[in-house]
Length: 238
Image 1 (tube, rainbow, N blue to C red):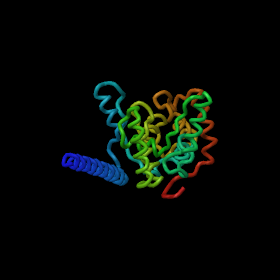
Image 2 (image 1 turned 45 degrees about the vertical axis):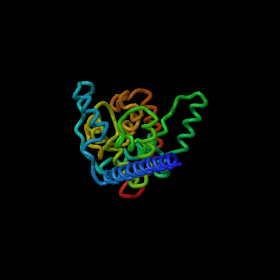
Image 3 (image 1 turned 90 degrees about the vertical axis):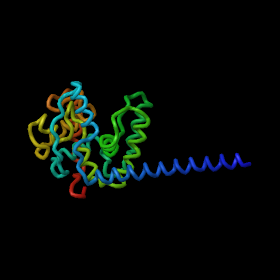
Image 4 (image 1 turned 120 degrees about the vertical axis):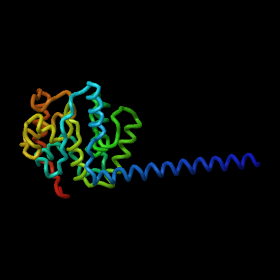
């Protein structure tokens, strides 16, 4: 009886410690997301990785980054990115189950696997997770997406996305991409330039917006048609 009692106490002690550890992790990650909502990060994880790779001569020199407020991005670009990446961005809570269902249906019917990541999910991945393909990374992506949607506004999520998304070798964020490909600031992109930038987002290391392939041009045409339906996200409004 004495031994059983000791085992029960030990088991409860381990459970208590595990629950305390889980609570600590939850509070720590929530605080992390909250703080990042007010502090513009000098580096994101992909940028840090690019600098490390450059140090080992494995990738191009990362382009200088300048943080841009949401209103500093062309309205055309904001609409083009929504049209390309997440048309229900303002209506979902981080996960687009409609798009996910369509992707699974397409796969079941023998089509290619389509991405169903929302802008919120991509932002969570870029801001907080090391790039690696695993179920743990997927779980972390979903976990951080929940916190982003709880603690950040949609405007803040879109601003962070546009400042951090990968737009080619060593090119992170729309400002760097605009200067690299069109020699202008992101605020002054016209509708076609914005559609070209958005069209290469699924494969920024395969395609270039200033040298579009036929596949990219087909995407550009579709994006330009959808842009007219997209809301303009700015100043806490849509």
